Structure formats: structure tokens, C-alpha cells
Amino acid sequence: MPRESPLLTTEQVAARLGVKPTTVYAYVSRGLLTSIRNADGKGSLFARADVDAFVAGRRRTTTPGIQTGITLIRDGGLYYRGTDALHLARTSTFEAVATLLWTGTLDHVDLVPNPELTALAEAVVRPLPADARTTDRLRVIVAAAATADPLRFDTSAPAVIATGRTMLATMVSALPQAGTTHAGAPHAGPSTSAAGMSGDPRADPGAGRRGGRLAEALWPRLTARPPDPTDCRVLDAALILLADHDIAASTLAARVAASTRAHPYAVVGAGLAALDGPFHGAASGLAYALLNDAIQNRDPVATIAARLRTDGHLPGFGHGLYPDGDPRAATLLDLLDDGPARDMAVRLAQAVRERSGTHPNIDLALAALALHHGMPADAGEAVFAVARTAGWLAHALEEYADRPSRFRPVGQYAGRTPSA
Image (cartoon, rainbow, N blue to C red):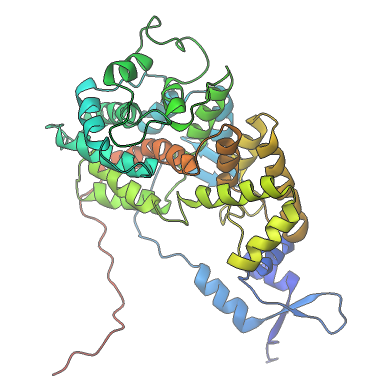
């Protein structure tokens, strides 16, 4: 039997990984694979052992038994309950998409905050340090709201959906207005918050307009700039695009919590905890810094070079589920008005794509949205957290309908051998 060559060509590596050659080059540029120059100088070769190690590292540890009918990612597309999420982002509202995730029916139902829960959450959040991130405040709001809901352990579907609608509205309404996050500073009162999200057109100037009421309520919590008629619509689209993404890390955490029959607030708390990492929800803040540097320097290539030299990778680029590009990023950037942030994001994307074949992901698009409207660096993470709450609760509904405590992985012990 002929012996296998210790070296593989780019085409052989691409076939082994099930990706395009350009994606292999992207892995090299990100330091994930090491290549050597072919003797003829016309191609790259890869050590078979390195490729085998890379394949082993890509195998994700999964928890068996998760069958979901919520979100499908296939052939570069994203679908909620069989409906194209990119189309929904352009034509629907976040409220309707939340209902679709929870019930399977695309039906817009207003999200109305509970004034008592909002008042409690505002009082608890108010003493937090001025530099507390918005997601820090969201975690506190969710925990505070749970303590005031005596029926929180009702995990029947109608109860969870009702709780979810109130929770989402309260999470946003209890956040302070942009520029008033200092402890003891003025903030939006519960009466103002509730009016801004009610179903009464006289109390809600956005009623009847294609804007999405939750997006309209969230806007002034992220920026002091008044929105034009299309701005809240773009924020609504961002919420829709981020509402769910199959079994992401935070969603798995939420499902594990739900499997123990933790109440919906605890489920969301588990999701928020996992979302906090720099390789998940907080990644948009890193992309914000990259994009902001490029805008200030007016030189995308120099910014890319500096970031690669110091960090070895580029935040806001690449996604394992979308080797040919994150469609959420393309959709959100397309909806965003022209301006320095969007224009530089496009220039960065072009420079990276030409060099390594890597495409931008949703984190870069969120950074462009935030910078374009004068939002802080953590705004993208906040949008992510609010949006994904709908998805976490949809997955909780599936778990509540399954047998309890079904997740019990067994570790492979590699420690000290017990003594006799």
C-alpha cells in the first residue's frame, strides 16, 4: 500500500475541510493553519499532521438530543420557522418575529412594560457605577424583575410567552436614557417608558409607522441623537437578524437552564451570562474599536496591519457557519445609510476579502450601526442581548415541553489517579 504524503496541497486541504481554497487561505491569515511554500514557488503546502490537528480542534463538543424547529442555517441562509430571516428583517417587526419564534405565527403583538416591574428595576439599576455596561444593567433588571413575579415558575407555554413579552419591554424601559447613566442622575421614569410602548396611538407617536415599538423605545437608551424616520427601522432590522441563531453558546446555556425547569427569567439570565464573553456577544465591542481606529486613521490597510501585529486576528470578520460571508452583516450594512462608519466598514471588508477571502460578520455591521449613530462601544452587545432574549425563550419553550434534566454530560477524567 502506498504511503500517504506528509504534505497536502491547498486543494486537498480544502476538500478535507469541506471549504473553498479561499477559506483555507483565510485560516492561514488568521494563524489557524501554517503553510509552507511549494518548491516551485507556485503554491502552498500543509503538513498533514497540522491539518489533522486542525480538524480535531474544529469538532465541536455537542450535547446530544437537541432537536429544534426554530432556526435553520443552511447554504448561507438563515430561516426562522422556515421563513427567510433576511426577508423578515426588511419587511417585518421584531415583535412579530418574536411571536413567530414562540408560536410559529408571524403576528405583531405590542410589548408593554409592567410599570411596577419597571419602577423596581429602575430603582435597583440606578446606583450602579456610571461606567457599567448596558448588558450589566440588563442582567440586574432581569434579576430584579424575577423577584417581583410570584408566578415566574409557571412554565406553561401561554405563561412563558406572556412573561417574555413583559420581560422584553421591561428590560428596555428600565434602562436609563442615553447620557443619564450616572448614579443618581435623571432617568426615564416608568410613566414615560410605558407610554412610549403602549398600544394607544395618542401615547405612542410611532404607532402606525413602520418602526417597531421596541426599537423606538431602545433607541434613546443607546444614543442621545434623535432618530430620523428610517433609523428605528434599521435598529428593528438588527434586532430581527439577531433574534436567534440555532444552538449558539448562550442558547445552549439557556436550554440547559430550562431543562432543569428554571423559570424564564433565570433562563434569560443564563443566556446573558454566556453572552458576556468576547467570543460571543461582546465581540461587537472589539469590532467597534477596530472600525473606529480605521475611521480616525482613514487607512483601512494600516489599521488591519496594526491589529494583526498586536492581536493576531481581526474582530468582526469570519464565521464558522458562513464561510462565504455572514448574510446578516450584508443585510444590515445594506440597510445602513451612507456615512463614515458604513463606508469604512465596506473598505475594511474589501481589504480583508482581497487579502484572505474572509468576509465580515454581524459584529462589524453592529459596530458600523453604533458608530454611525453616536452610540457607545457596548451598544452592539446591548442590541444583541435584547434581541436574543426572544430566541432564548423560544428554545426554553421547546425544553419545557421535553423531559426535564436531560442534559448530563460526563467528563473524561484526566487528573491524578486516586490512591489506594
